[in-house]
Length: 418
Image (tube, rainbow, N blue to C red; front, side):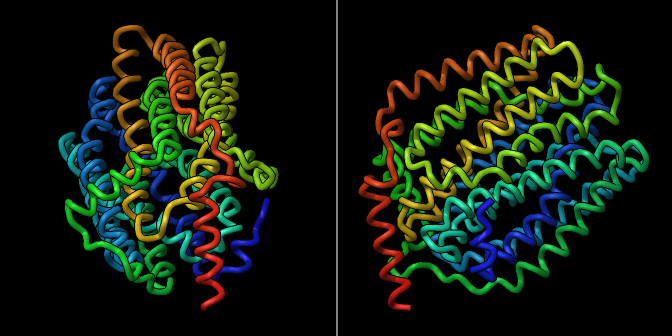
C-alpha cells in the first residue's frame, strides 16, 4: 500500500486520524438504527423507510454542502457539522434510554444525521486535493477507503455484541465519544480558504456545478454507474433479517463487516492501482463484479458462504471507489471541487439509501433470496447498458485526458509558486 500521502502531509494525517475514530462510532450507529427499528416494529418496510427518511435531507444538504464548500472555509464547515452529529448521537442515546423508545425519533434523528453528514462530506472530500500532491491522489483515495473499511469492520462487529449486552443506548453513547475525539483532531487542521475565483454559495453556483458535471460525460458515467450498482444490489436493509435467520443478533456484525473485510484486503493490496490509467473502464468492471457477487449471495447455502459473497462484493466496490475518486480528484478544478463533491455524494449515497427501500420491497413480496438474486442481476444489466451508452467513461485515460493533464499542470505551477 502506498503510504506517501501520510508521510508527506500533516493535514492528511489529521484527517485520516479523525476519520478512523469517527468512522468507528458512525458504523456503530449505522448498524444500531435499523436493528433497533426491527426490534421495535418487526417490519421489513419500517426498516426500509429509514433509508427513505434519510434521502431527502441527504439530497438537499449534499448539494448545498457542495456549494458552501467552494465558497467558505472547508475546515470550518467540517467542524460545524461534526458538532451537530455529536448532538444527534446524544439524542439517539437519550431516546434509547426511555422506557418506550419512540419510532418517530429514529426517523427524525436518522434524517438529521444524514443531512449533517451530507453537509460535511463535500468539504471533507474537497479538502483532499488541497492537502495531497496530484501524483498521490490515487494513493490518498486508497488510504481513505482503508479508513472507511476499518470502521466498517470494527463498528458493525462490535455493534451487535454491544446491543445484545448493553442495549442501543451504549452504541449511541460510544458514537458521541468518537465525535468528541474527532473534533479535537479536526481543530488542528489548517484553515483552507476558498479559491480566489470561487463563486459565492447560491442557486446559481449550484446550477453552474451541475452544468459542469453534465458537460463531462466521463464524470456523469462514474455517478450513474455507481448509483445503478448500489440501487439494484445494495442489501444492507436485509441484514437484520438475515442475521435472525442465521443465528441471531450476534451475527449481524459479521454481515456488516464482511463487505468491509473484502474492501480492506483490496485496500492493503492496492499498490497495483498506480499502474492503471484507464480508470473509467476499471469502474465499470468493478461495478459488474459487485453485482455478480451480491447476486450470488442469493444461492448461498449457509452464513459463511453469504459472508464470502459479501466480502467479494466489498472488494469490488472498493476498487470502483478508488478509480472514481481518482477521476474526480485528478480532473475537477478546485473552484468546482466542493460542488462536484456534493454531486458525488448524491451518487454514492442515494444509491444505497434507495437501494435499501428496493431491497425491502423485493423481500416483502418475494423473500430474502429473491431480493438478493434479482438485485444482483438487475445491477449487472444496468451497468452493462450504461457502459454501452457512455463511451467517454470507457475510454477515459489519465495519460491523455485533457482535464487530467490541465489539472496536473495547474497544481504543479501552484506548488512551484509556493
